[in-house]
Image (cartoon, rainbow, N blue to C red; front, side, top):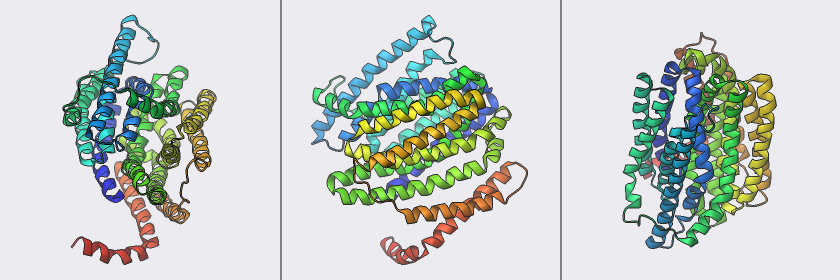
Length: 476
């Protein structure tokens, strides 16, 4: 089941990731670093709004929708979620338009008249995706995600080409998000326009509020560095840093999130219906898959950082990105292992307050190190601060998570195999000394990836040989 759902989510996440990467290639060649910085900061403000005001709702729906007693109970939950969402949308849009009208926060490089609409479009889109994911409908999830990405990509590239800058790109993203939600309108068919069930409101808030604070603090770790950079270095440096960060998100973040999207609903269902042992088996599989994806991707990005910067980014972004990418790749590895495995202990046990405390400590660490390291090393200092913060967060999650939920013993043998395979991959990649070019980048990816896979196949040859006849028989 995990492999089946993982394969489905891989397909539906791969297309948006390719489109996002293609957009990054185009934007860094059309926009200046300053314009890209404005675009990035505006996206971040809308994201912070979603983390604070909507994330609790989405997380609560994901937790309680599988446990709905019947269709009427499910409808009460969804109607409550819809009603609360629309109320928050209106308030935020009015507030952002007011800020734009009076010139509030005018010293920041943010397009405030767009923020409210972007917040609403992305928030509604994410709620629809959460419901489809929780309902174990990866193909419907994929259709919504792909339409949003495709429409947003083509419109934003057109807007950038025509000279509409960051504002044109952001409006394109809003249009893509709203058009995509038309596909998932069946979720809301037949539901009342406005009705809030007090019992569900209490449950959603009690479960989601601590997690919302957690996600806000994670956002501080992820995003506060860009505001520090803007204040201490300049918006141009924000553009270079953001482009480097997003490269890691489109690769490491995307592929590891595939495992997460497939695994977490299965783990929750296994715990609810089959008990702790079944959930433990799913958790071990999840760790092995996330680790096997995150380690080679992070190491590969660090090893090929100059090739990546030369092949993907525009001239004005390359020099800074070459230094920043290895640090961000390491940060993304630590973040994915924490979020997509060790944090499951708190979510499965309901101990979200402890999770919030861990991220609070990490956020403080991040802010403090940002202040000192950005002053000393510029945007690279922000990347180093992010690594330190995620390392602290991962260690605390690992240790404290064992006290709140019976997490299974880590599959150390599988992890050791992955690490050895990555060492072989690193030797192969490091031995290729060619002039920076798209060809050298693809050569390193192909040969390094082949070496990694070959080593893992050697380690698992006996298992594969034993199970191939079974596979062929089942698929005859």
